[in-house]
Amino acid sequence: GAGVSQSPSNKVTEKGKDVELRCDPISGHTALYWYRQSLGQGLEFLIYFQGNSAPDKSGLPSDRFSAERTGGSVSTLTIQRTQQEDSAVYLCASSLGLREWGYTGELFFGEGSRLTVL
Amino acid sequence: AQSVTQLDSQVPVFEEAPVELRCNYSSSVSVYLFWYVQYPNQGLQLLLKYLSGSTLVKGINGFEAEFNKSQTSFHLRKPSVHISDTAEYFCAVRGGATNKLIFGTGTLLAVQP
Image (cartoon, rainbow over all chains, first blue to last red):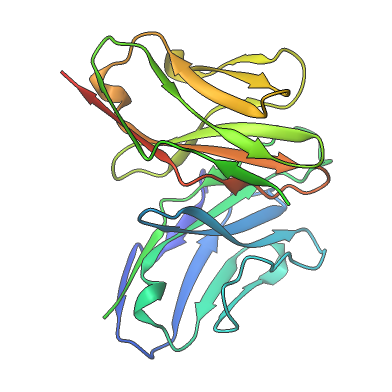
């Protein structure tokens, strides 16, 4: 597609349930990122995939959070046993890789998935 | 580790007045700096970036920013704001060999008539 696509746009779940959020990056972008946006917290880095390299998971807040990227394209962020503090907007972004032709440093963001945990 | 500080969570300003949104960064390596804007109910989009070269960077919608290495700052400025500039503005830093951006907590620019 033309831009980064995320689904669902809104998700309401009950505490303790698992949720999956999907991100479809811009075609040809080898780098993919997940961020979390909460009121007053700005954008919190979660995880970063670059090509076939091991992902940078340094921002994942707990072992309830995990992400995978299949075939170098679509990514799924999974939150197990959701808690109320997980309520936030989860943003996905993609970009060219650092040393790829045409790299400008810009990240292209999706519209986000708003998660509400009751 | 890289970090970004946006001291002002909210900046109210009257239409046609000048504005400066402050951003300070902390990094032990060479840095690349960005400003992103998020209009109400929309996604983030790039406003401007500093990768190298001239320290004065011009972006979209009449915004500019100046990279100041000695003060570790990258403040965003506009000489005359419009109502349509009301949005949240995020400063971000990338350092070294990683493509990962670290964002600040954002500044809400509220332009009043």
